[in-house]
Length: 229
Figure 1 (spheres, rainbow, N blue to C red):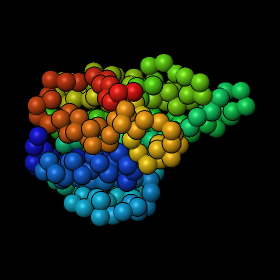
Figure 2: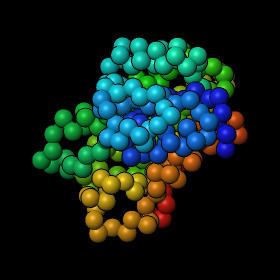
Figure 3: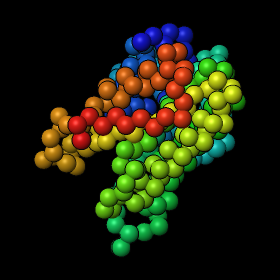
């Protein structure tokens, strides 16, 4: 799948999934801006071929708009945005705090909304937005209320924005992963069968497709990518 000549911004690019996505996009021929709240990637060499934009608080609308405008100016345009930035918290309501709900909103939904708002003035017809939701948001389990509420918001953002942008020829879709096979998840669930989880590379391949010209007829879709979970 070729993305030659495409200019793509990726948020949350320094994490496990973000790194896999950046690598896949660069391999497909895209010009990639790797954006993250962290100031430096853990292993910069893993993001070779991308321009690095660390230290950006996506919750800050003005800073995000300035960053996307700068990237677009450097790239000479913007063809796609991939919203990976986010986080996870497990907490029961009893004994929990409102701060957790606020944190999940800020990390998972506000970041996506802010990045979309900043990117919209720069996306031409044929542009692509891909968000990362969560398959678990379809039905929340114990301790998952705050996280799944925020990821449900990502799903509704995706559907609404797809309708808003369809006359401009811009598609908006979201992936709904199950448990992603990352080092952090392996540490948290050491007794799990990792082979059943979805690998970052599998999610990255799906994102490459959704950014491609071949996916032009797909918009407003919430796509489960769940491995064998």
